[in-house]
Image (cartoon, one colour):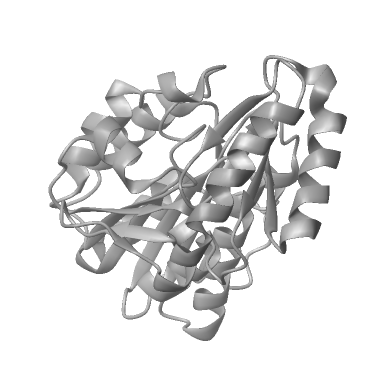
Length: 274
């Protein structure tokens, strides 16, 4: 079977998953598998500190790691959070805070130097958010970003977003919208798309699994790589949820129902790879 090129693949054109894994099997040693964490590997929880990956998804990643070139988790969470939830998985790279931090296969955590001066600003912003935002808002301080959640109080969404945007304008920060969350981060050029674009250089194929609007940049990076190289094989997979509507699903080639269903999907893939 000749390789499929998804560079010009339209998101709503059906893609056969079995055929895609067959193509991947012929180039597994040059393929990178990318995963978002929240909502993709792990179900979203009212308490973001209580989130745990779906057991079958974690087991499948551990089995896939020696089969493909690389596995990378690309998340808004800090690297240490990911390490705690995922354990010391051999051959798995962690990219935290949209790429502001990274750790390769259990190695030390490296922080983007241009982001470090913003640590005091983020700490002060977290304190201010706790003091000024109404009860029901959950303030998640991540050292290099502050996430403002209103999942347990949906009626506060407008207030939280307005306050967050005002603080971003005042401090010169960037804003990242998500599933019932607004994240404020330093004005440093790092995002999921940039991470994926760098990692796939030299790869012969890649899959990206994500569930949120920030993952659309990662999808775009795979499509750009495929458009530039007819031999590159890229697949964009959305994990469905009602909070992002069809925006993420429409940008993907395949849609999976949930993190648990993703684990089953990856387990089946193992039978198709060498």
